[in-house]
Length: 348
Image (cartoon, rainbow, N blue to C red; front, side, top):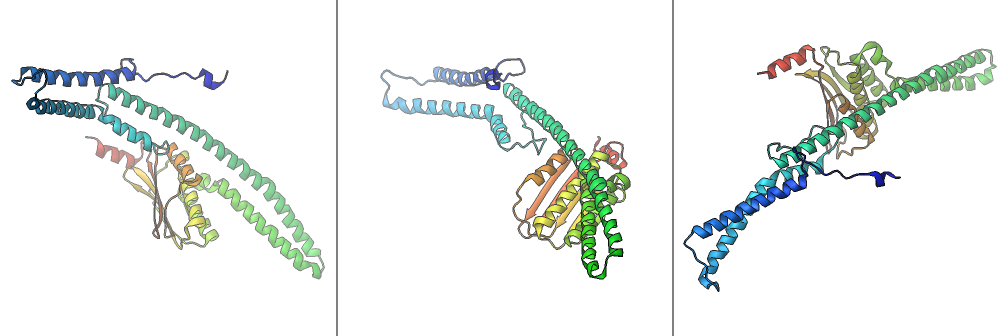
């Protein structure tokens, strides 16, 4: 039996367990009944009379009464069903990579139950997306570390053995072969340096050994050496310990941002800032490149997924000819002095 055959359609219910469609029907029927009852009562108590057949002088009264009832009915329905417009707009723009967007209008009776159900659905979807993204990124980091170890331990050692063998051969080789052997030796040495550089990018050992600030300094230096673009660094030494997961996210987002600058920005300078502002750590990567419209490919979406894992906010802004700015706002963990001061200020 396939999944389509076993799929069940569960009707949306309100807080009392009633089908939401029935609740909306009762709401609309109640409004219509109230309007028609009020109109009929007013007509019965008014001095106006209706003849049979209807006289021409009575038509304006009947038309005006009908128009007034329809206008009142439309106004009450619009007010009553107004939250559905906001809910529809949220459905059109909701993005699980930009969490915490919720519909307002929880005090609308039956519609409030519908809105609460939709918000609850978003909570579940975001939690499931966050859990699956965390698992995928954990697997990705583990695979990166495995590849980095193999590059360093196997290929790196093999190239080292080849380099030492070439050196011994070069020392005993005749003069006419030394130039070619020297060229081969330099090629192997360059390949060994490249393997080590790739291994460092896959596994930021300096982050584990020396901390986030040293890793950011090393990352900026490697970027300048590879691309020739100078990087101005503003790294706050007061930055508290953010935890291993948050620091890895900050490092990977900075790495991806600098990679995008090298590949696409055509920039002549860049700026890397990591500071403490209020109760958050702020990462800013700015360049003076070509900017332009932002196309959210796999790189930026991967950055958003990483930011979502630690509850951080990621913003990417770019203008034609004004460069690109990446901002990552990471809440400080509870217990850090800056976070405690901010919480104290916000507490009445």
